[in-house]
Image 1 (cartoon, protein in one colour):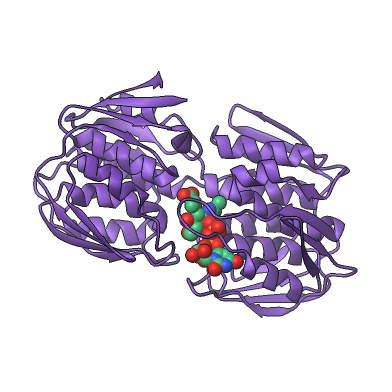
Image 2 (cartoon, helix red, strand yellow; image 1 turned 90 degrees about the vertical axis):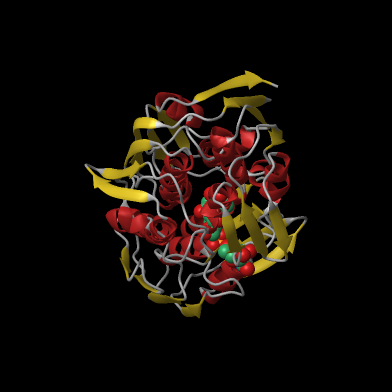
Length: 420
Ligand code: EPZ
């Protein structure tokens, strides 16, 4: 296993480019199962999760090749409708092959994803949606087994106790595009990655309207054809790079940071006093000595993204004053708190709330990554902490960030990878 070693205290300077969006690429790759023709997806980051999804497509009988940021998928004939436990258990997002397998083969057997460190990962909304389309659902030996003689369009409400669901919206959309008749999804997820998937499906010949709003309408078609597609930039990586500039009081241009995808985050950072300007093809973050503490609550898009909660907690840990973070999407998503304590952060957890009493500085320490975004938060804290930090188990980081340490090195950080 690898670790990252970081000597903190350097203000980052320079220009960095955001990679393609992990949370867009994964459902896009699954959607390639809906046609027997070739699809080419460009601007694909080289991530563990992307390679896991490619393995799943191959296990189903699709041909999939990944080189130079481009994935070519040809699901001419599928040899299996089963996504096996070994692969799905390493990446919950694999569950999004359920919809396309049902759409293409009218049957699917996908391992239940199981929980993970950030909380329970229920799939009740996924199943509610595909049952509305006429699928029969059974749980057999840890697998969800679905079958439909025919898929018929239907109207459904996909909101749950924590609001809309990104991958449930994706799964239902991918099953509905080849169903007979019209499907209406109320309380659909509005994330940019859902919009990216709908745009890809429409390029394949689907008839989807309303994507990006809480009401998506899908007119079923008989056939989808292959197409080429360029993935949107990763708004969570962009947000993480913006935070790296802000926390080190640096001066950086982040190319590919789309303001329209980062509204809630930029609003909070502006409130805190971070200097953010437009720059050609992205954003420029300029140094600001003192920031103000801010409070925020994570919500479905366009609300404050839960995937940026840990990273902003690191910034608030070195922003003197009291800030309150409320996590409404994954109430247990606070594994990073204990590790930030090891760096001297003053954070109190109270249920879904974290109360941070920001300090002038943190001190470097050996810390352990527990999940993808917590790892990013620990790297951010290490960039500003006094002295040396070591972040272990960074395979978590490699799931969702492409060469993050190289990007930070380019901006002047003293950060390198070592074997644990
Ligand atoms: C997507 O996960 C993202 N992953 C997550 O990013 C992200 O945190 C999450 O959306 C929320 O924005 C991918 O896109 C691959 P949800 P998803 O279904 O779709 C509850 C990262 O760090 N829920 O939108 O699995 C659920 O428990 C990852 O990149 C149900 O109750 O999340 C959660 O509380 C982590 N029933 C809330 O809804 C369901 O059937 C939102 O989850 C499904 C979800």
